Image (cartoon, rainbow, N blue to C red):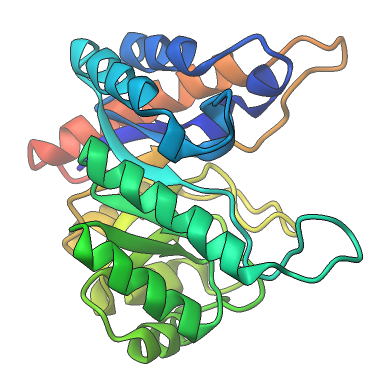
Amino acid sequence: MKLGCSTVSYLSLFETGKMNIWDFLDECARLKLDGVELQDRHFGLSSGRPSLERGFWERLKTECYFRRLEISSISPEIFFDKPYEPAKPVDLARKVAEFKEWINVAYLLRVPYVRTFPAKISILKELAGYAASHNVTLAMENHGAVVQNVEDHINLMRAVNSPYFRINLDTGNFPSRLYDNVEQVTRSLGVRHVHLKHYGYRKGCTWIDNPKMIWQLHEEGYEGYLSIEYEGPRTDEHGKNLEREAVRDIAKNFRGRIDLLNKGVKLE
């Protein structure tokens, strides 16, 4: 397994302008991570159109190379059921076109996976077909009411029926049967990328036994990225940002465990 981190882990720092994409890469290199997961809103694109930013993508490839970081996944924040503006109809054609631009970026950067959220079968089929033509795989996250358990995953996978449509498993997004669902999804379906959380479903805020979780993924044959997605408190009662410290501690803990696992040591 490899250890990475999502830009979402530093959401507050990005939103307040105290971190940009290059700072994030520096942070991940200092933490000795293997790779990074990049969300679209954190690139800071001046045009807002990824197709117009070829120079930016060339620089990104170079900056990652010199820091010895892979890009494990690109994560467009595109919800196909939400309009761009309140009380307006959903412009599906525009959303699909925008998503295809991110597939183009993944192809340019040689990124294997583009994260997507559940959507209508027709949309997922169209995007999976486009991704296939670019040798990119869609990785659908278990996010929202449509995908709540392994049965929902199986139904969507069968309906789309494409080798270029696989799973981005979020260990914090199952409202019940957490370890059972993780085991069955990993065993039965094509999990290609994992968001590793330190706590479970938000409404319950149940702490996750991550040694057990990592070992379970290993036992089911998962060998891809575990991407840290910190979504805990962003600041303390005095307004001090907690993200850097929290991600550092999580990365240290997970790094040690993954290194032991890769050496064949069973986690207790």
